[in-house]
Length: 191
Image (tube, rainbow, N blue to C red; front, side, top):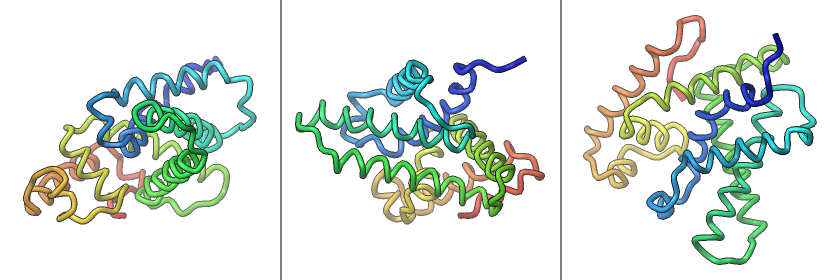
């Protein structure tokens, strides 16, 4: 039985939530719920489904990242200057692509064949789902460290925790992520 487009898009919810959380300006988080941004992105994708010209999960992920970047740029405009800033939209889209690339490299998948690329994208989606199941503090330090490249000291300053406390959150978060992946996934949690 063929899956519907809504089901296919739904697979990307946790992935988009992780990316939106990474790139939503911290000042807007009190005003905007990341889940609402993701829901709007998925709704727009569903409405524009006929315009999607790709055939792979990677192409669908790139398409969804473009829609998400436009939505994040729109939020920045609504809560900041009202002027449209094409450069900001491009920076957000580029930054989303970089974050997605870091997630993929985190999974240590070096294959370049179409089947290996599909498996890598599937693991990225599973990683995003597993991250979404972690406590908020563990999610935040993992994202800041592994996806944003922040040092433990920078993270500690951001979350008002000591460096050893941040290290503990990272260690616990990674241990929980490892529990959610089977050994055959070849994921180690090392960047």
